[in-house]
Amino acid sequence: MLGVLGLAVLLVVVTDRFYGHSSLAFAAAIIMLLVANTPMLRFNCPACGQNAFFRGPFVVPWPSRTCTRCGHDLDLAPSQNR
Ligand SMILES: [Zn+2]
Image (cartoon, rainbow, N blue to C red):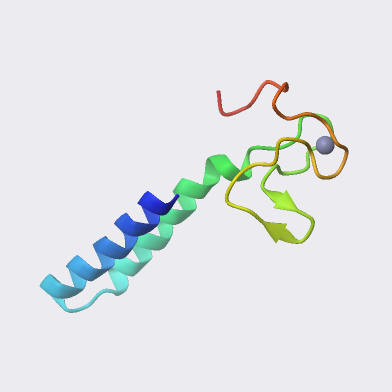
């Protein structure tokens, strides 16, 4: 996540230097971040469908070990990312 964010910022800065108009690079950076976040949004609890990155109203950059809604152990569950 941090690597992608750094890459996105770098892309905007470099394009801004060379072309002086960064709105296109900015849009590309946003798309890159969305693509990087897609697997994260698919990591749901197999029992109830709660996203592992959501803890109540908060979004955390790492998945929780147990489901915050039903307490299902996500370590034992077959992940959709593997
Ligand atoms: Zn659950």
